[in-house]
Image (cartoon, rainbow, N blue to C red; front, top):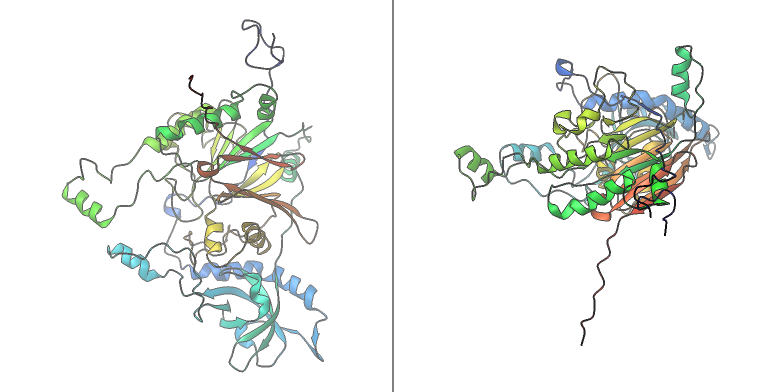
Length: 502
């Protein structure tokens, strides 16, 4: 009996099937927001404190506008709230509001002594799950160029963290603390229209607008955690066969053909070059090996297997590749693209640097964080480090709340450089959200979550928390026309036991 049209397993093996699904194209226009200067133009001598003042200067006007709209007619008794230009100009008993950058003094936050201890091979403390000590050492302050002001109040239970810029309304108390009644932040910035940047580029070139077809779907995976060992092979093969349409027949082949691009959001490989312990370092220095194995040798298995995985996919589907915390990339944000030397086979599908900045097909190795336009929608994606670090400042807060707050504060990494390593920017801070995205992706989270948030002028953002594939065996698929979201879960059933004949 003949199989349905389009099935790879047809009843007549030598008869060409009547229907073969074709993959929809991806309209792709990446931004290069987080790329660092090259070579000698990249400097690390600058002071990190300048980043906070730069962030405050760039967000101050937006925060002031929000505060003026909210508190223009606010009175406490007969006293009207007045704006104070600097935090040190606050006067006791005066109802006022001031704009500044939040600084959280927390008992368990890491400090420079920890780094010195590691550098001198002193046993460093274990990694912290939280920075909250639950004692009087946990304090919140508001700072600007003039100094710091300690703030308190129930309205601060909105879980602010170091680095976010806000306006605080209240009065100074006798002990010098500022009792906060209400707060305001910048909220979502302007959101570009769909295909706005693509159409403007055509207008500048004096070319007519394109007639665009229906967009396909965007697949997102993170936390592949490839080690190169055999126990992972079947899961990677299942993922590859699903994305290429080889796993099953209709209707799954047709659904897979609608996926026009894949985003790999960090932690694709487990540590291939681990940091040595003191004993391993001394053994390597003396030329000795533990049981014939040198822990300092580079382990090529993860990169080789990942290269093979990419090579299997790239003829069929274009890929945007972000590095993550476990990948062989620089640690400080923004992480720069994974070097093409890691992928001797799949790099053949990448556009050479000399070509146009617009990568339509193939492999695009990008930064973490990354932003760009996919099918006309602005997409902002991270490998998840910014979310994980912010969660250490707060207690019992949902990942969706954290992602929403970061957008409303207009900062994709507010805790950098305090507790999250980053490049010391001086003239501009690309970690600020200047254009509101339509889709915001955080990779390597504990479980899948989604939420749609709205802004003050009808901005609408889809938030997606993508779990680690190594743990959950899940990928996320977004319909780029309807913004509907589905998850694809991979499972294996154990064979049924056959009863022995009596």
